[in-house]
Image 1: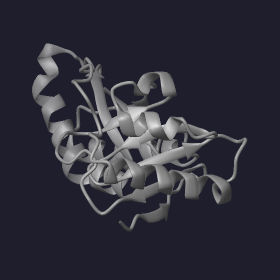
Image 2: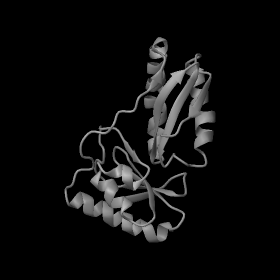
Image 3: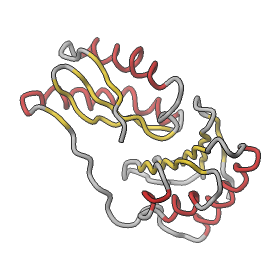
Length: 186
């Protein structure tokens, strides 16, 4: 099994491509701590490594964010080994269903929210996934779109600029009701 590694705009995060589906079409999963990873044998295995601070599972990739206490030179081979062992053992990536996140949308704005999600899915999420992350719609009220950054994009120095200058401008161009975009945390 050959696993590719790519850098991301976030220097604390690397993207690992195992050459097979990770989440496939089942969405994404973002684990901000080992305690949150109980439903994922893969994330649990990665959090067992000293220095792993966050694990994000995408369609065909895994992003791992390291803590400040370790360097990638030491951690990268350990992550590669853990990912390889997991897939060679044939274990599932996730077990059971996760909690659905509730979106904050005024019922009168349901049609606008659907347009926003469609634009995000078509134009933004593929680019963000290329950098090892995801962007999740969290709500729309009073002209303000609320989005959550995941994976390599969470905590990335350029994520706020991406939201304000990229996503906000694009949404305002196509949907006049959008006034601003705000980043929300989990």
